[in-house]
Length: 175
Image (cartoon, rainbow, N blue to C red; front, side, top):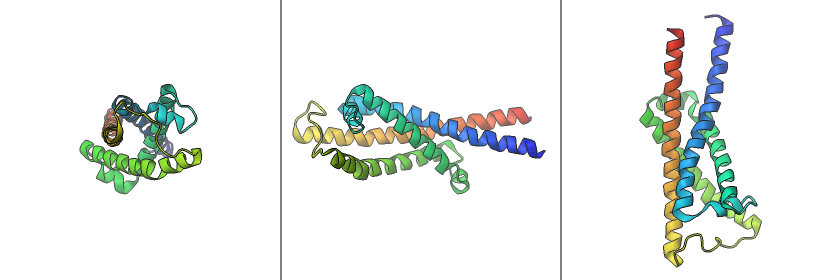
């Protein structure tokens, strides 16, 4: 194999990882956003954290964050030790779920309180959901958990499917 061909393959592989990460993050973000929006009407709150307290603002901010998280996932999962351990679709999906759980813990356990403190907000805007008291709070917590689970499932599956598509195309091109 010539050096030029080898460097071209490396460049294509790097480009693939970025595109696959971004596309997988977007797909997963849409699924997660649907849960956020339908489950507890969280999109205006997400937008408000960035100064855009509308449903549209929440969606835009959420999808941008989802794509960035997808890119980071692609970088992490493409490391040799993890790439070998996540070769199968089920393993990639499991990695996506673990990654989304970590994002959920960091974002809601660390970043959300810091953001709310910086904005001078002492509590969530009420009502996020049209249910009173503890029931409404419980629905928000469940929605956030389910949303992160959906993100992880879709992220891992979409990344695995895009990786399988690359392998098929590479074999066909070299065969």
